[in-house]
Image (cartoon, rainbow, N blue to C red; front, side):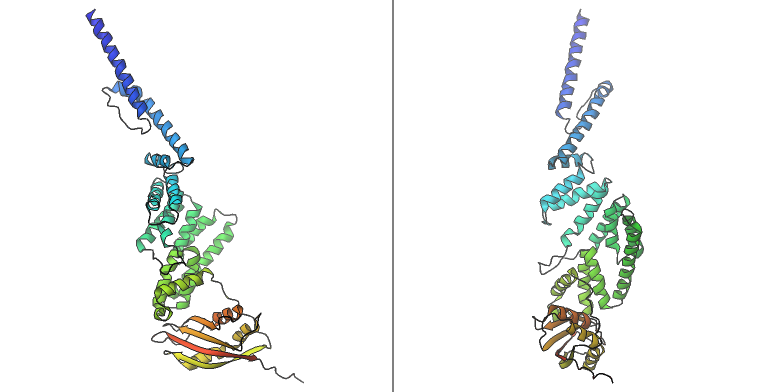
Length: 403
């Protein structure tokens, strides 16, 4: 009898322990932690299936709540190893939306961290957005006076993220990898663009167009490194369209190369003006020269503040007289009898900028004159120079008819 009583009491104790364990598991399923200090292997094996099933169910529920827009659920799912949708990726995206353009805030920093975890977990779009967030604070802002320059370390980190995205099958990641390599590494840029083009409706045409762009950018890059300022400008204009943070860095270097900072108000003003120009960069159309131009001009009151030879200036205007007259013939509104021109010649001898006055001169005439004269090049002066002159406009002389 005593033995039976002991056995019965022992069984009741085991049942009590078992239900206590189940109670603990039920309370802590959300965290799926190993909270059971089992006293025997048999008891652990009996509950292992319940724990695994409960964890899977809990994570699935977190993902669903995350996809419904619950930020805490996204972050909890990320902590449990869900790298893509319903986990780290969505946690980053919700933080990014909350941060907006507050690049210095906690939400933006945390968004970058979640996208990085998503990328490290193998999710391609996480890599793509991790790269984009590195560069986001350095996007050019024409509304501010001073632009921030992205660092070399940040450029390398961004490139690595885009490379990860491309390797893991993101077409957009391959496109962005090509964008950050154009004008920098020709072969890798072409390879990235080729992968991106494979996902388009016309891959052959896409690949040819991108390859041509990469080759042209490389020519400009090489010339720029040899102090051809106009090619630095062209490369900068191209980069502004595909990789603005690198374009800002190039604009800063261009200012140093040209040496015109003191004449235009400093490097910040130079960069600001280059951003404005690059936003609307186009190749200005030069009117075809009429067989008998209607308008002509005389160069009046030329002056040089600096070391550019006046004879070179007059020779340049004489050599391009037909093109410049074509600008005058293209006017859609009346032209003032005189137009003032100011040319800034940089240390490379290139005409960095031309300004036409008065301000109310026909815009199409001003742009045409600026486009042509900004192509003038002179013997490089030891320091930047300013050339001013007046174009006095008159009707062109009509030759007598032949008999």
